[in-house]
Every structure is written in structure tokens, then in C-alpha cells.
Image 1 (cartoon, rainbow, N blue to C red):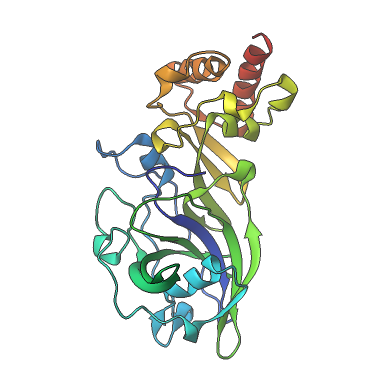
Image 2: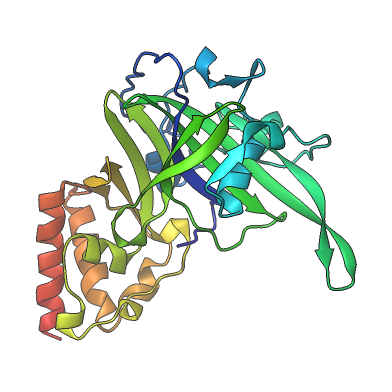
Length: 305
């Protein structure tokens, strides 16, 4: 699913370097600060803790692993990429994803490494210039692996994206990045931010009305309701935020929707009315069991209409 505030693919990858292990980074939960220019969806979906330093066993030739290596591994559909074949691009562009904007308060680039750069690719009428974008954030150690959050994309504007939580090894001589495992949240959700807390991998995702109900176990098909019955603007401002712990739902925040007034008609009103009632009653942070109760109320309303 694509949301307008997120321009490129964000991927959490676990990297096993096969060298001496390091300690586990333990971080506490917490949203971004109360910035009036930020949507509540942005504040709650991005963690405010500083990222850990790059350890010595995450270096290649004295430098942190190049973002371009993860782009090749993930964008090209490969399962193995040799680190020596993906050096830092000679010329990089001053795009919003670059390290030059690491301190911008409106974008969560603190601790990211990466760049945008132009490459020539074959086109129908000859070579064309295309922009590539890739950044990653080191999250710490998880189950003996190095955890990263990586974004890749192309072009200067946002487009449909795909994000995954995956596991890789970095092994061999010369060393290579090897894809080992893919982790998937429920309902085809897309990670927005992630962090390591002890032995746990935590990450957030934006969810639409239909995804929220499916995640709670409500079978829309048995109610003769399709997901299309619920408006989905694919805008972050019209979504709620879910947090996962090792791919299992931890909690959901019910947030104000920019398009809420347009949703209150037909069967879609069942979700919008329950959503607003929960917010009015200050029940905005739901545990998995509380989310099931919410979905049951919506389901009863759908059955009666």
C-alpha cells in the first residue's frame, strides 16, 4: 500500500556478518516530539530514539556498508551481491533523501546513510538518465544479526512502493550480502519505521479501514462486504497506525482522518461512526483484544445494514 508522505520503499533487513558479535541495543518506545507541523500519523509511526553507532563489524574497507549494495540486493531481485561490486556512486544528487537533510525536522532521516544518484539506462530511443534513491538506518543487533531499515526507489517523485522485512547474511571472501529470510506483517502492511529493543524487532505501519478490520480477524466476505466498500484515499492522513513486535500486532492508534466526513455514508459509515465514537471516548490506543472488540462492533453494524 502507498501513502503520500512516504516516497520510497522502506525495508527492514537483518544482516549476519559472521564476525565477532556485539552487544544488543536496547531502546525505549516513544513517538516523535509534538511538532504542530507533523501529522499525528507521522509522530506515532516514527521512533524518536537516536540510532546506535555503526559497529566495527559492520564496516567494509573501513567504511559502513554502502547503501548501493542493499539497493542491488533488493531492487534487482538477486539473492547474493558481492560488496566490492557496489561502491558509492561517484556523483550524488542533493535530494531530500540524502544525508544533507539528516537534521530536517519534518523528515525522519536522523541516522540514515544513503544518497540519490543518476544513472544512464537503455530506453526505446536511446540512453536515458534515471534517478536512483537509497538510504538505510542502522538499528542495532537482533538475535546476533545487524538490523537495518532500508529505503529504495527511483525518480524524483513518489510512486507505488513495496516494503519488506527480510534477513540476509554477509559472508564469504570476498564478502557478499546473501538474502536468507523474509518477514511479513499481516494484511500486506508496509513498515514505516523500525527499531530494535532487546530481543524484539518493533516496527510501525499505516493501516486503512479494511486492513484494520481484517487484522482484527473480521471476515468481510462472510458479511458480503468487500474491502472496496471502505474509502481508501491511500493518504497517510486518512490512516491509523499499528505497531508490531516480531511480526505480531502489539497495538493500534485510532487517529483523526482528513477524509472522515466523506466516509459517513452507506456501509462505510459503520467503521467511521465506531471510529469516531472510540476517539470521543478517548479509546485511541487499542491492544489486540480491544481491536477485536472494535471490529466486532463494526461487524454487528454491517450485519444490520
